[in-house]
Length: 218
Ligand SMILES: [Mg+2]
Ligand SMILES: [Zn+2]
Image 1 (cartoon, protein in one colour):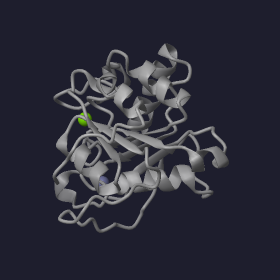
Image 2: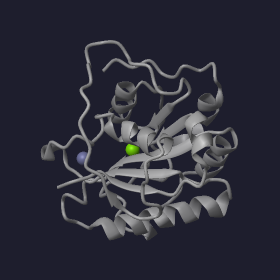
Image 3: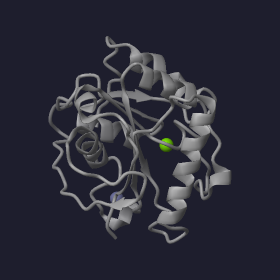
């Protein structure tokens, strides 16, 4: 199976995007409530309290917001790309209904299971590198539709030092160790949150330029 799936809806001009830091957000347990059997349809999307206002605050502070999410039910054939698109469209509508600046610039989704041996599933940092490329290059990426982007794997030296990010404020917020691993491999500032609390737990820290994020040992 190819992937990851890309949904790019940024409306900011390239010039601005090139200068902006990116806040990479895991989805379930950060923006919306996770569920034991996955979030399978729009009516299972429940925003975490304060998440929309946090995304709005990040946008007002000049951040690009990119969701990077593992969604193995797609590879498990529980549902497909159309459903993914419906879920993300609904999630975006919910966010905007609570804060009209809570616009997600890009959604990047790995549809695979662990055993698919893909190169996008977190803790691989490849979805973050793709997000950087999508948001900061002049490449044409389709707007408001799912896109099947094959891309090259990057080698991460898990035993070496943390690399420098493309922007010193680039950040990764997640509720799992695999999120922290992906953010570490990219070089982002790392912020781990509790899955029942989500983004509100880390937002002020992300916005604090002097906060270098959580320590992480891969
Ligand atoms: Mg999560
Ligand atoms: Zn994948």
